[in-house]
Length: 303
Image 1 (tube, helix red, strand yellow):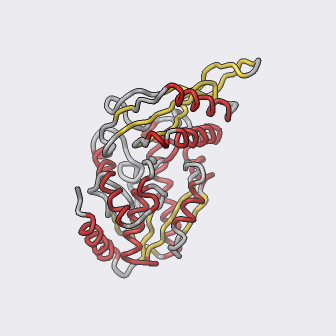
Image 2 (cartoon, helix red, strand yellow):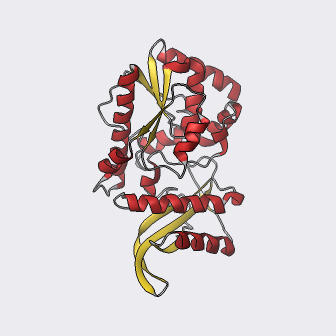
Image 3 (cartoon, one colour):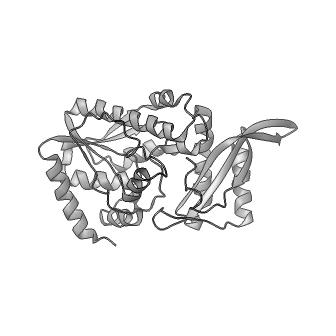
């Protein structure tokens, strides 16, 4: 386990040295990784750092308001509404790797736009060790590692969390007294990797609300990660009508660092309450299934 006090002191100095007298932007998603990186970097350089939260339209329910409230003390915080641009970038894209690259490309372009406005030369990211392992191997590209475009208009990329596992990041976040410290992991590409096939506004609305239900209902189970995903369509019956609605998968896993995971055993009553809420609160959902697959052979996320 990392020596937290030593790590914080070392990384504040490292970020300060890397950025120097220049300005930087940081990709702030609201997750524990980027939030911790932002807090460290802000300690290092203050308002030389512009935290940029990009509302991609792929975020959790209420995430934009949460980020705005949590990081209001950072005077340089920027919130960028890029929902239409991300949907346009994902139009017609069905391959998981192409999705990640499209999202990575659009993220970088959004950060470059802000960087030009604030004359920033560096990009700070919350990349952690498992991101690098999975992207450098053959598992999948992370939007902020293997998903980055070849042309990046920054003099340097600073990644203060790059050698930490998720549980170590949480230790650092607790040391920094971050409210985000205990949040469940959320994928960098957002809800796009919880939608199989093309990402559309309708599918995003379904998966956002379903994930909100899952997080609420499984809070007492204290999962490493719990969420919903949209798999495709199937027939169902609602009222007296036959419908062709979405199939939503529920996934809840236990893990230490995300490198391996075990599907949680949930009681029947809980599963029935989840399916009842998801199908009852969304007329376009025909059925709900529970994913019992461990990692490996599955990954935690669907894409």
